[in-house]
Length: 534
Image 1: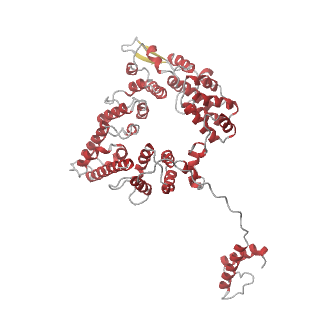
Image 2: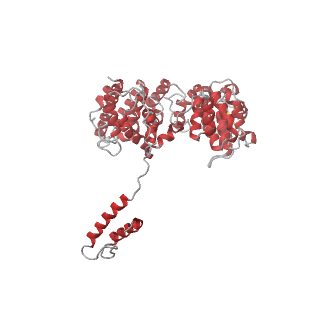
Image 3: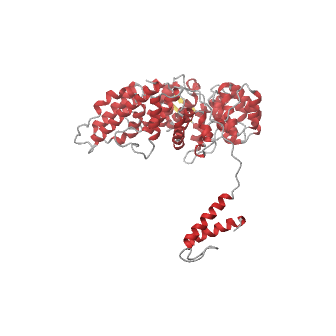
């Protein structure tokens, strides 16, 4: 059999093996009881022939060595802890929420944040497991890639499973020219890939906002609409009055999304011309009626969405289920500078304005728009007024600012004030509505907030309800409660006496939940000591 017939011969042997030698005997093999053995012999010979017939290929170029990581190495105990955290994957023994064992994977984000704060380098032998963990959990990726450093992108180029690291790293891990290298900056901006250009613009914007804006203006007219939108979004960093002329120009963009983003950015500049136009429009819709027994806010929503409103970012078409007039009205109010309302409404403070009754069921729409404006303009004074007193009876009730809106408003306050407000809310209203609010508080929780959460959990425990009704809050407590609180919780680890109204077995479940909480807090304390090298 010559070499040119080898492919056909191999196919014949495979076909005979599939059909059986009784039904099809390959050429050159005698039929009968010895045919199967002869078939295997022929396959062995053909295998050698096929391998010998391959021409050696040119050797592939060796990959460049991984870049050096100049950061200090982890303390040995912390490296061992990281290996344990990465080994506790979903579905492995000891994972999950059952029993008293801590959920190690839920502690990994906190461990990574602490390691990054201290500037440690990731152990090379743990990088594959770290990238695997980040591949399965997008919330881990920013901290994991920061900890892995430049070696993450080096590995990602060798393993398709880790390509997310290239997408998540500015410019796909490529080195960006320094802002001082004007020729290199211009070359990359003119010829680079889109991800590289976005990364370049963001890097320059973080250091020199004006230079980034000027660079963007050089090619703005020729960019694709979707690219213009991404580039425009980078101006959120360092947004200032100097950006107004360019953003005003973008209001005439042919893309609706670009126009809307430009309008949003301009409305975040209270001194902009767009903000002034919106203030006039919104002010014409809202007034105080002094003819009533109690001064009352009255609303007259716009009857049309004219071309000027559309140019300034007002979306004319209302979503399904929304009235057009209320839709337009909400957009005007959220884009108007909050600082203009006291003068418009009789010199009242934000708290006094929010306390006024609102006629004709416009209260929710008006307050929701003010909430969006306070968040957009980062106005803590208005945020406090809209949040109200945490102990007020209506703090979580119908007709008030929603919990989602309150969580956003809390983000405008400093961490200490935020924690005090949430602690007061929990002390009055319990934990049933507090989950979203706890999520915006700084970790570890302040002493007052931690006490409020533990006291509320203890009240629920004494009431005899099942702990899984509070599993979300309990999970947050494991990650956010100050580890120093562990000693104070020891008394809650025992099984409580169950009253007549208690759910069967609830006491045992609560004891288990508190045991897990205490164990987790102590583990977090140990993690912190290991990262300090203690």
